[in-house]
Each structure stands twice: as C-alpha cells, then as structure tokens.
Image (cartoon, rainbow, N blue to C red; front, side):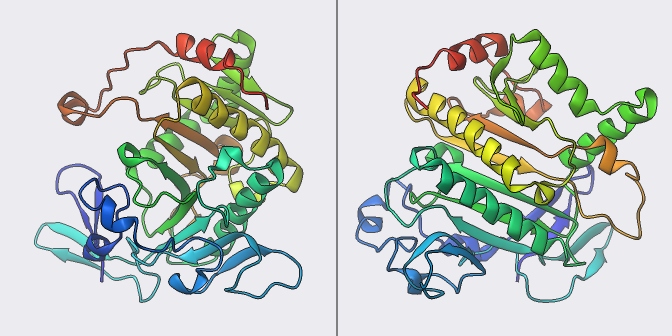
Length: 342
C-alpha cells in the first residue's frame, strides 16, 4: 500500500509507491529492445491487458472493454495511489504521514499506435477533454480527495514510460503546496482589488500581445512573463470557472482548437520535443476548511505546458529559481510564426 509522508521542515508531501518500480518502461534505453516485443496495452484489440474501463466514448453498438472505442479511461495498472481503503493520518514522532489513498487513472487518447494528440482530428481532441471533464466530475464526489488534476508526459525527458498517446488523472487526499500558493495569491488579489487575478493577467497579455501565442473566442495561450522554461505556454480561459469539470461542450471545442495549435507549433517549430502538460483545477472544498471562501470568484482553472529542452539541475533544486536562456517574448514570437497549417 502506498503512503504519503510530510517533510519535517517545509510544507511538502512525498508519495512512496513501491509498485511503480514494476511498471513497463518503453523509454528506458536499457529495456527498449525487450519492450518492443511486448504488446501495446493501449492498442485497440488489447483491452484485456488493462483493468476494466471506468469511462469510454465508443462507436454505437460496441461493447465495454472491447474494440470500438475512441477514448478510453482505465485505472492505472501501477498506481501511485490506491483508491481502496480509508484515509488514515498519524504521527511518527515529530513527523506526519497518511495512507496512500487516492486515484490514478489513464486516459488512452486514441486506439491507434504512433498517433499523437495534436495529429488527431479536432473531434477526437474534444473527446479526450470530455473524458477529463467526466472523470474529474466523478472523482470530486469522493470525500477522501482534496485535489485532482490531469497531466500528460510525452517523451523520456518528461518522465513518460509508454509511447502510446495517453494522459493521466490523479486524485490526492491533500492540496499540494504549489496549488496552495496559487490559491493564496488569487484570494489576496481579489481581496485587495475586487478583481480576478487570472482575468487581469489574461487581459494584460492579450492587450500587450508580446507574449501572446494564440487566442480564440474562449481562450488565450501565452508565454508567462516569468516563464521557467523556454517556450513554456499557459492556456487560460476567458470564462471565469474555477473547476474544469463545469466547462460546456462549446468551451471544450474552443479549448481543443487552441491546444492543438500550441502542440502543433511545438511539433513543427521545435521538432517534436518532449513535454509535460498539466491541467490545474480548483481543489475540492472541505467542510472543515474555509481558507479559500472566494475561490469560485478568484481562482481560474488553467493549463501549463513545458517543453523539456533542458534539464532541471542543482541550481533549480537548491534555490527554487529557474534559469531560462530565452525570454518569453522571443519564445512567443517564434511559436506565433510557426507554419502549422491548422
């Protein structure tokens, strides 16, 4: 059973999950020859290699856990956290720990091999976003969970283990420190100015245009003013919603459009870089805490994307600072000018 331990000095939690040692590593250079002989568990027709699906968008008449699906969500076979069991918290001397209760699911984005998310028709990308929406809405109902998010790792440098296009959803019993910092900043801004911090940032980026990459009727995509990585992009909705699972179908169509454009700009302009994509949404409100009582007004869900063109090293780990060799204005200009034909 996994467990979660809190650092004794800073507000940081660490998940210990020994089962993850057994997961297949297609990107492990020493195991790549053996991995190529293993069947792709996410390929259409190989549904028996995964746990039973918890959500799927299927062709009419197709049967659950068989071929005929467009997007399929299954529990992770090697989960970082386990959905079974009660949440137990305890002290170990001066330290704190809790049972590793949570959820860890895989969103299989296509039944085909060697097709990346951005290469799919817009309708298929919308289906992936609908899968996120459905699973986040369902997991929010579990009173053990405090924070849920979706993420996508592409390539070895981004921590991916399997090549077939997929993303993941994790539910945690605690709110991560970096999310707490965003929530605190949003609440403080709202209390001082009676305005939404994310709205102010988006309006400023659209007005300036220097760091804007793409925009449409629903979203703006820009390189943040203090980007940690070259070509880092944030996608922010124009509509105020703290929870992603409250998005409408139309909003998901517009999101699919701008997400595809950003990923195609990476693919063409940066020659298919490894990257991480993270969808941040509001934490689950707890009856025990009213720390963020204006969250519906001051926090806004958003997506961060980080191309992994360089590594994180001692300076970053030691200080929490990042060294970025490229100004975000230059990154945005480069991405805007990529000919993506989309």
